[in-house]
Length: 191
Image 1: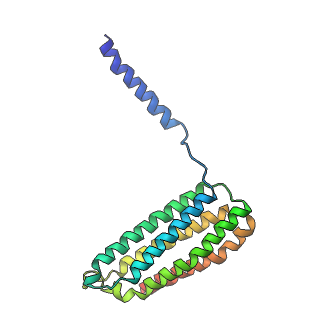
Image 2: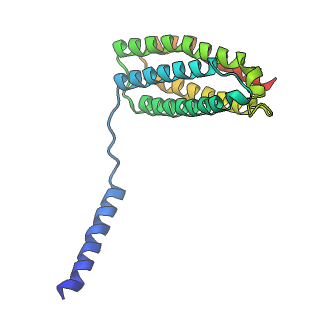
Image 3: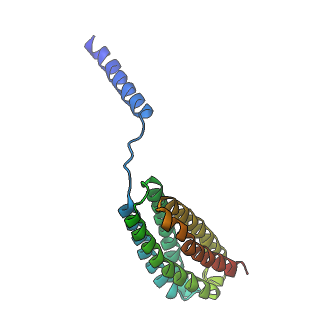
């Protein structure tokens, strides 16, 4: 008799536990400016890595493996951007001091973005024959640039919403420069 009740008891416990976890609100931790700063630092590091790889890209057959590396690094950059967006959205509003730190991080990030995008544009001829030296990879680069532009814009918006009023008012100066650099790079790959 105990053997028959044991599975019923386990089923009841399991159902109760699953129901309770499904209906209780998710536990979230409040993120803060240091988390956003760490995410921006990670983006900067990933941009530096991508920029070096793009700079060394020779195109053609000899560049096929490096093209795969560039794609992998671009995907990682997208993952890092998404993580930064989540961190910013989950964060409480920044104090003036935190807003200053975050603003400085974005100001420092802008030249890295501009440099990487300039290198990608300069390498367009190599990407045009980058698939084993017989086909273009430019369509893929254009797609990646559009994705990175979208996520960069989303990150900018998420962070701007958390900045104190003074810094939120100044944020468009940097964010517009970043958006313009992406727009120019995408346009170069559309021609």
